[in-house]
Length: 152
Image (cartoon, rainbow, N blue to C red):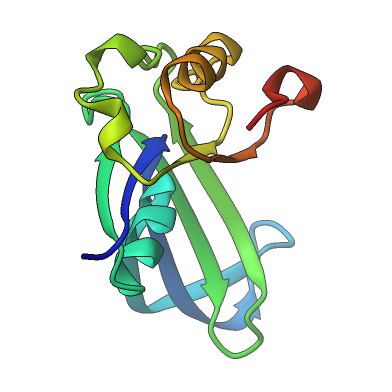
């Protein structure tokens, strides 16, 4: 029997458009990019969840409602790998995680919190997880008060 991990955090649509840049626009000093191909994947905590699954770890993934979508779109010059622009679109009112909704929280071997500080994970959520869960809690957070995450 393998590991069973709970992953919590924000998920986004992560899209990259790979382009060929061959000239500068005559309208403004910006590159003109011709689309070559597109790549899409789950990003942020979705990427963490996918990586754990790739190692054969059983996961349960809890994230914000897909109605509260986050999108990251990159345009990249294929030849140089240089980012031309990144466009982010984040839902303005992401509903925070309700830790009390997690069933059989101690049925997991570990909890991984992948927090991009978009509103789904709060300091209070982490305190609740520390109180309710008897195993290791691993956190990667964009929050600034890391002492508030002590014990994880």
